Image (cartoon, rainbow, N blue to C red; front, side):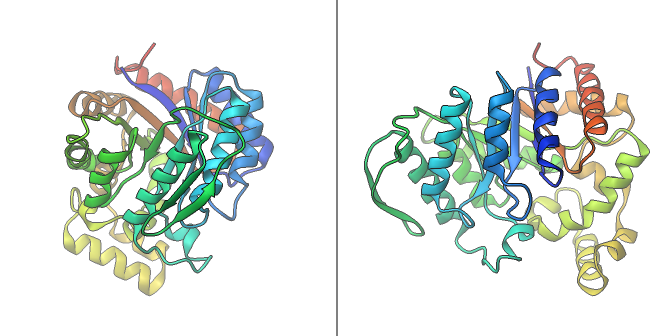
Length: 326
């Protein structure tokens, strides 16, 4: 059975993020991921506030090894773990253009960045004095002051084939974000985990769209998906011509101009979309086909009452599938 969580993009007032987390926990959501978006509300200040106002929800930043050195992340997540009574975990991404481009940080050697980040995090969380030199990052005689934090879980959100394999090798959870890629992506994760006998949690992040306005919002955002998503994932539900037409329109005239090339079938390949009943049926099929463990619902804009209503409605729709944990 599947547990529920939320992922918040913190482009809203800080207090609203905290109130949304508290409300989500009251509705039964068990995980909170807060995006480290660089130019938005600070992820660790908000997670600290959420930790003081919640009681059972597991809490994580969604961060990367480009804008923050792994040792800095290790100390921050260990602090969150201490403050929350052991409820912290970490979610890592390989860096996205929305954050890295304005900082003029090239997205180089993502596999080395991910491997070094995981290694440094786990060693420092043991409370030991650590010297380590990887291909991208290292530490010398480093030790966090919070002591042994135990096995704080690490999730990775992979996209490319090699990152999926690395996720299977190293991570405690694989956070997938493209519906049509769940089969191939999770199979690659499973291949990566075979040697170590691991079985990372299977996590799907989505913003299910069950009203006409939600579908319209998904269409508006979709050009950014095409711009940032590897072709391996896009080819699961789009043709080469469709991919190139959208990317060419973005480069020539911007994301809004690219919307003329977007179809409902494309959106359905990327996300769970349709009537409430269709969304429930799709969710049930995805859980059965891919043995999902966690469903994370994406919150991308402000409006506390609206977002809480969405979480309440989404939970009810997903519960109708008969696949949610009690």
